[in-house]
Amino acid sequence: MGLSPKATTYDEDLGLRATLGRGTVDALADTAPTTEKPPEPRSEPRMNATLAARTTVLPRRKRAESAELQSDERPRFELVEVIGRGGMGEVALVKDNDIRRTVAVKRLLPENKSGDAMLRFADEIRAVGQLEHPGIVPIYDVGLDDHGQHYLVMKHVQGETLESVIEKLKSGDAEYRSRFTHEHRARIFLEILHAIRFAHDRGIIHRDIKPANVMIGPFGEVTVMDWGVAKKIDRAKASGKPELKAETKTSGGGKLLATGHGALVGTPLYMSPEQAAGKNDELDERSDIYALSLLFYEMLTLEHPLGEIKSLQDLLATTIAKDLDLKALGNRVLDVGAPIEYFQFLQYGLARDRDERFASVAVMEERLSRVLSGFIPIACHISLTKSATHKFLHFVDAHPKGFTMMLFGSALGLLATVVWVVFSLVR
Image 1 (spheres, rainbow, N blue to C red):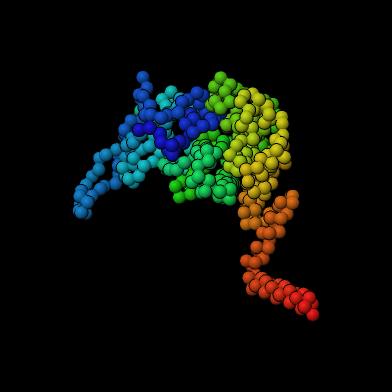
Image 2: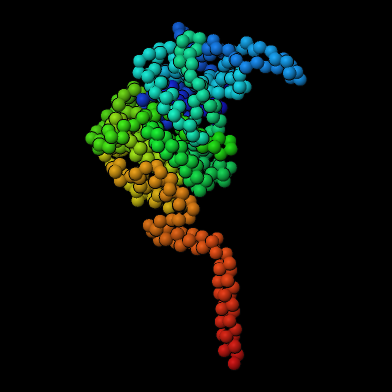
């Protein structure tokens, strides 16, 4: 069974995100998207129909109409299909025979049983295991399969990625244009902020925020995916200023969107300047804030500020050493008809100096919530007009009787003026 356009991919470390576009550094290089069930490896065992020797523990009815119990000797987990496979592991859709639901199972490949890959796998499990939030994909369980390979069981998140949504909006899809208005996109972004703030409050930064790592569910659920390079931060250590320098070690032949082990961790197009410089030990919440601001800009304009740069070397050098042209970005927001107040909000997250960015995601939440409620900071003649208009509308909502009296008073005054003018002319 092939991977459908709305199928879920789970981990950049596995090289799976290539099916949806932009790749991630500190994962796997040159791993092709899985469009068909992968062939059996020549020498290593892979995920079988039975993931582990563990069997079901719950009994089942002998017949649908009978209350008589029958023991169930089936394996607990049975493979439905492999969603994707990379050089470090694979993710599969699996049936849980006890709970009768489908789940996603990620498993390391045999060659990654020990060393850094196993430690990173364990770190991912422990980090995401602390993040019990509706906007973060939960981990259900961990275990060993029949071949002694570690695996983790995750919620099977259905829907489509934000990257897919952006592509359909860019193509002019009428249904998506009608559904994903600029205000709706801003509210989706607010949901993303809720999830990231929850992680930050627990000392964990994502480090790979991008459209491909956000899932939009069939009922509008927003889930932040792929915490494979998430990191517990040392705030005392992160407070120092990074010495910015370009360090571009990858295992993908220097490709802009290739993935590989090395100093860079994340996706080059969405790296903050300090992240692009390879200062991973000094990253803090403000690095995620930079990526979040890039993400929101792309949601509004359907293009990336640095999307025209084709070379990884040039991209990293530009990110590290040059400020974004905020005037040009603001004009682009106006050109596409997006509310200028959204850009005036997000620009504070795009500063090259992280000390000039939003201090926290909580501050971003509060300011965007106020903007969505109509409390628009005045920064130009457009925002002045919109701010005054929204304040008047809020006054009408808060004082309907007073507004009605003012309206009738104004109407009577106007009528009296007309009568007086007419009387003066005919006299």
